[in-house]
Length: 91
Image (cartoon, rainbow, N blue to C red; front, side, top):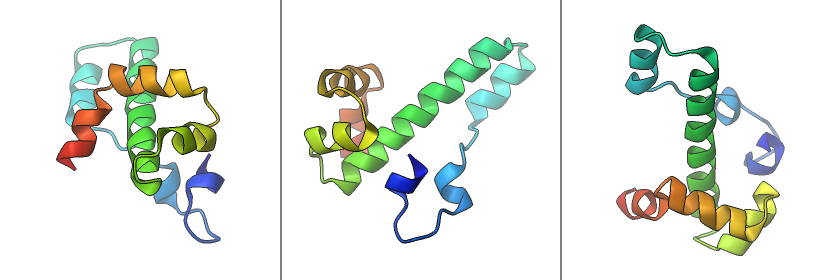
């Protein structure tokens, strides 16, 4: 996916990085299991990727689903699950 999302011919560390947020650090301190931490990281990565691709395609959901290689209805489910419409309006 980094190859598809990267602009230009080089993939930089920014294309691969999953940024940890303070909530992730709190979960680690509270003793969350590896499965929970992994699931949370996956959700954060999915949301960030969907938002970034939607911005690149100027909100075209069909094109976004094609780029991400997911079904159009799956994309809609994830947009609803992660409240991405709100995130797109804010930033």
